Amino acid sequence: MDYIQLTPWDLALAAVLLIIPATISIALKLGLQKNLAIASVRTVVQLAFLGLILEWVFSANRWFYVVPMLGVMLFFAARAGIKRSSRRFPGAYVAAFGALALATSITTFSVTEVVIGVDQWYEPQYVIPLLGMLLGNGLTGISLGLDRMLSDMTTQRRAIEARLALGASLWRACLPWTREGVRNGMIPIINSMMIVGLVSLPGMMTGQILAGVPPADAVAYQILIMFMIAAATALGVIILCLIAFRAIAGSYERVKWEVITRHES
Image 1 (cartoon, rainbow, N blue to C red):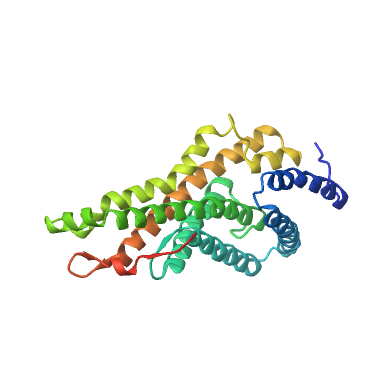
Image 2 (image 1 turned 120 degrees about the vertical axis):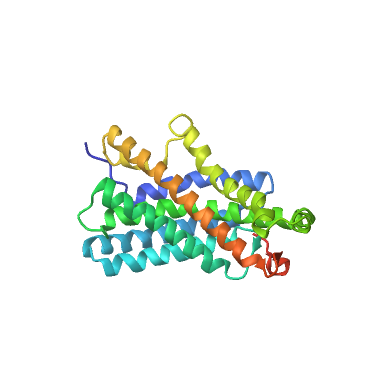
């Protein structure tokens, strides 16, 4: 089965579709037409540049080209994840990078080595797309989890102080809100798994089918991806929430409230 290759002219025709959201924005005075135009240009430029880089990396097929690219992807994912959270702590960006790096690398390389069985651990055809999908979902998870944990702890400061006054350890006093943060970070992927195949057709599966891959094979890979995302998101969220707890834990079983800062996401 072959696929129909798109030309630049085809993409230019597809850009006409942007008239719809632009018209809605103008008619309802939403003021989004400028942002829409900027986002559209960035989409084209960023993806075109990525396509050129991927072609070069795939053809070179060397680990010293793949690893730096993975590092750049991790950097921007961690940065985006923390920027989306309204509450932060000192070292949040480094912590997010470490949490995502550990969670996604464990998940990605265990799957590529054990489940898929690639010839080389750095096989760019598998490692880069898989890690990219994990990071796209993982950054949402860590941002939601961190924001919920720190926001709720700040709001419920008196309840935490009361628990400490009654003799609870710092861990026990903060555990309900830490647990809620982890739970909140995992909700999106669980919801996605509930409706996949019924309400939505995931992008990877759709792309494979459009590229001519048999639907059964595309479905198998999509199931694998959903399981990977669930595992990586859970690991990333719990690691970051635990790091956040350690960052705000003061001496003498007290919370260092002053290190929790608020930022507009």
